Image (cartoon, rainbow, N blue to C red):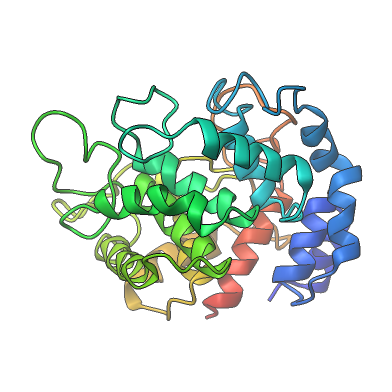
Length: 309
């Protein structure tokens, strides 16, 4: 559990950090704190960047981090009210205009293959911001169709060429988070199949101990061991553990290495440092690399609350 000093530090942060820390670390959902996300700090700045056409950036997916897609994902993570009218309107606009012939949301054009990673993220924020089952039927159908034979997901699964038989940790965690939020928000369409897909995706991550190649046993990539917020489409061990904790997955010995890595990253002051942010223009500055990060600390504390020593 976070020390009182660290909790005080978190509760002195941005309005969104105060709200999510109170909700997830103290177990108290405070609507009055949530309301401040609209008027104070990062949330207010992001909402002010929305254009008259109902989009952020240049539309659904461009430029990357300031597009409607990644902005809505960030606002969902920050705890913006699910009933916020601007966010709901942009979700509706995306769902009405961006579906491809395969049923997925697709920034590349209606006839090109959609991307399971994009659709997992979109299912997450669309569900958070109140999209209905009817609006999400084709997205759910698309995601379930894209499950790889090894139980996870890979954005290259539906591309031309040899059939993909091994999942990606990046795509898999995006799909898992989307499934969790859809079910948590009351989505009922193909719910049993979605739960099964989450279970097989969980096993995929655990077989990899959340960071290691099944084939060689080596760490898949050093970046997976670094801690980021926002992670956007990228996977790291903190995000993987957080996705399992959010679904209430019980402690498994195959988590232990990743959990120990997270614990070792805690500084002597009880806080975690941010790793280098993924490059690209953002609405608000990312937390500086190498310095204590309220968001990374909050998420690490949330994970260790779910999986204590």
